[in-house]
Image (cartoon, rainbow, N blue to C red; front, side, top):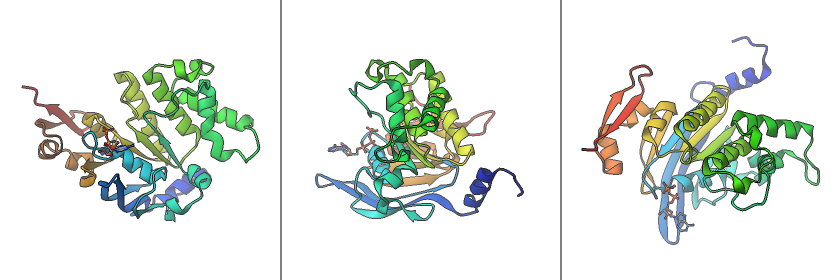
Amino acid sequence: MTTTNPSADIVDALSAPGQDSLSASRLTFTREGKLVIDGVDVSLPVGSFGAVIGPNGAGKSTLLQLLVGTLPADSGAVLFDGDDLLAMKRRDRARLVALSEQHGDGDTGLLVTDVVLLGRTPHIPRWASEGPADRRVVADALTAVGMTEFSNRPFDTLSGGERQRVQLARALAQEPRLLLLDEPTNHLDVRAQLSLLSLVRAQTAAGLTALAALHDLNIAAAYADSVIVLKAGAVVAAGPAASVLTGDLISDVYGVRADVLEHPRTGRPLIAFDTT
Ligand SMILES: Nc1ncnc2c1ncn2[C@@H]1O[C@H](COP(=O)(O)OP(=O)(O)OP(=O)(O)O)[C@@H](O)[C@H]1O
């Protein structure tokens, strides 16, 4: 394919068939004597959107923290574009991978714009201050999540959903190539959920690779290219949403009954829970 856009060239090169952007193998993590992550593999092609689902306590947040290196795996490897992510210096890794967490940045006393600016830390030389380009990235990230008008509000005064959007802006300001999201929509109203996930999907179309821990199976089915199902720290299924999200799997993993239908327009799975 001929193109005049150098970044498109890079995405094309990285998207060679069979090449994974993220490839984690046999990750294991024990906490207080309990095996929390049990030999988990994760494989995501460049520019794809993956979802990690599973019941409370299944290990979703822990897995994301192992992938980004904020928790040390007992064993296993995490490769990103073939490089050993966990062996990198923290600062180098932070230029590649961002994790947007559920409960980050509690009582910081920081303004919204300063919270987002923290995402620029790995890009700003040590002992230097942010420059106009960093401030532009921060402003763009706040615009992308619809939070520009909140720029000068103390972060602590925001609602849960507003904080969540600022957390995403911070992660976007990091300009990662791999974006990990821990329950990014749990405080959001339905419009804000769809808007946030559409934003992530648009970024993946531009070459970002994303992996989100999600509770809402219909949201996972609607947006994710692939789904990883965790149960008690182990992967019980992984693959395209349409093949993974079956009534039997939902019954086995969550202990609830559901009919899995087909969305009339997208063809993606639609899960109708049995509430009778
Ligand atoms: N700081 C901690 N100390 C002790 N145990 C912990 C800690 N954090 C998590 N755990 C335990 O590790 C296991 C996995 O937790 P994790 O938060 O990864 O699950 P999760 O799938 O993200 O859950 P949820 O859907 O409820 O957010 C759980 O049994 C949890 O109780």
